[in-house]
Length: 281
Image 1: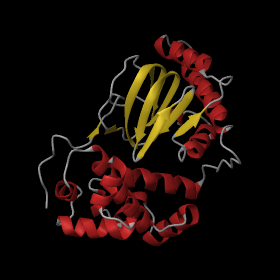
Image 2: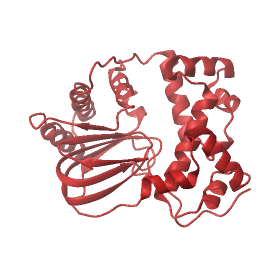
Image 3: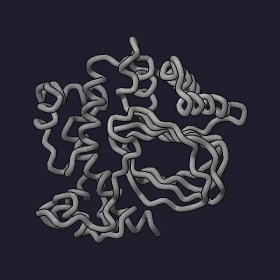
Image 4: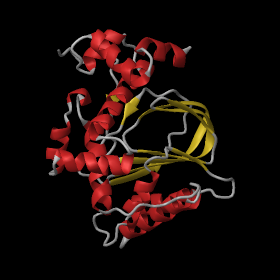
């Protein structure tokens, strides 16, 4: 069953125009609460050297304690700032690195994808790196792209130093297939209708191979990972949209609210109403 798009349904925004691959700009120096939204099809790296407040990322409310970096790859998020922030926002697509002969940057990004926030030490600020990137972006000259990629690689390495016992996986066959599967699942609409064989066909592999790759890398089957994404989408609406459970059920393309409630309870151990009340009390 389909229903009209709700006025308060979570928005998907794109700040990269057309085929634009990279953008850097200063973080808006204003105190305000932004609306919950997502950015699909590109990465977002946010560096804050000053400011205070909270950053909601999916179901987490994270206190902003500069210097801090947030790394997003399709999550829902919004800001509740209580002091004027200062910093930079980097947006870039994976295609931005296609001109590189090696895949070091993709390896570094892959290693960061499971970490959405990194608090830096006071002596490890990244102001100079981002200042130089912005200069090259605003006033491009010979080898500006290479310089920007170099500065970005330095920034990513500094961030990874803050991850304990890091083991950077190589960007080879299985990992690349798994990352493409993750991207496909995150952008499926509605994800509740997505079947494993559809994802496998999109990736040009068999469902059996897709399941084997998912189990090897994530320890769960492809169908289990799709179900996790359905639950994540449900939690986003429960926490960040002014919609009742029935409206959320139909938005996620469940046949009826009772089916949605049973599905959610089976995977989380609690009803949607209980989850919402517990987190928003």
